[in-house]
Image 1 (cartoon, rainbow, N blue to C red):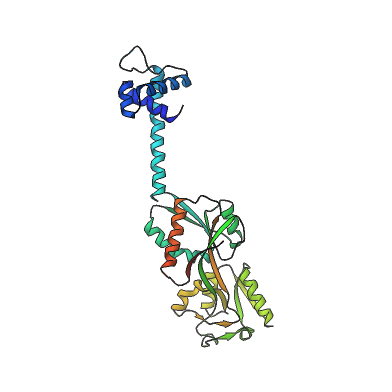
Image 2 (image 1 turned 180 degrees about the vertical axis):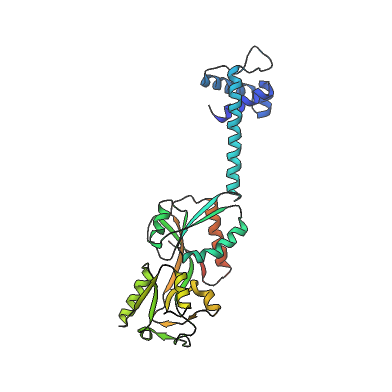
Length: 305
């Protein structure tokens, strides 16, 4: 039993005529008769009273008519739903990101929502160390990473370039300096994140090379907490530049270049290499590319091999 047979059956039932059903479906009358015979054979019951010229339905025909109409209605609903997905009038998108990478998302998500307001977007907060696996395991369609996952199952696009920023309170003794060295930081108390990262390892190694102690006496659970604590006059911090742009512009924090501590951070959108991305995900990538083409500071769009 296929949908063409059911469509043919309904046409005959509604037109009360094999010939009129053939005209309606743009088929020959023998093709209509053959489809009905095949359907009756599959069901094991006659559907029309052949002794009636009006195409009268049998009891089995009446039962099938209701179900056939429901099935064809479902087909139409499915076609409409797929069309809506294609035209981004429906659908959903799940993105995995952490506290830092969410900041990149905001301008892109803002533009995406203006263009496609009917698509539901969920941003899942995920630990950086789990982001790649979350995408591989289909927990999210896209992921925003601050490192190269180096996994053959993932395709990545560099979408933002950022620098590690050294920040202090405006009244800190170093705040007036235009440039400092790692050696100038030997006595400073660093407010650090309590989750280790590849960039922390680079900073630790840089201090070790310069034979300078790195005092991380206070560790906090979020970048937001670190910024506020430094803004209260407690210690100094190394954080992603994108995270403190607003505070620096408002004069709440002072950013100072440190010779020997210039580390570029590349943010990447990643997705499963051989995945059939949803229409929503492909639209999001187009918006990310558009934001980069508008030459917004730090934003880029570079497909990685």
